[in-house]
Length: 116
Length: 112
Image (cartoon, rainbow over all chains, first blue to last red):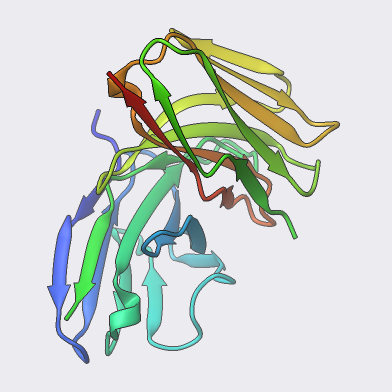
């Protein structure tokens, strides 16, 4: 039973390019969370999605960042026109839909984005 | 706004010592609390999850406790080993929509 999968594990982009980060949750999990870890900083919440819905995007930068979790396929975190300050590790977590708000979250290995 | 503070930020000990890592949160309305380990450049490894109805959890040489009334958690590591060297993250389940709130971590170095 595979855990949370993220790809790519490492991504290098030049300033102004687009970055697409993918997250496949644990099979059967319908909740996905994205977190960002800037260098020498703790992880910070970005966005919480359920299938086809954004539940909470209060941690997302207002511009250039978007996220989706379609009915079929992985969740995508998209960063347009990347800047050097976007260089960070991006972690995805998933949790089951068992009715509670605070179900245990299971983390993927992260995608390390480097912007040149 | 819920914040998680970890003390100390860094800790260096000789092999074999017992040690305690501390975590405190500003709002005692924490639901679950989880301790993770993160190795440099790597992902998160879950160590212990204390659910809302529990006060402590144990796994091998690790013991974590949670005192909601004081807003504190501790992670106790017995007989430390060089392989325990990593950053330890304390994480609260208490965000408004179920999102996690992370401390900045305690960077542990265990010297042989």
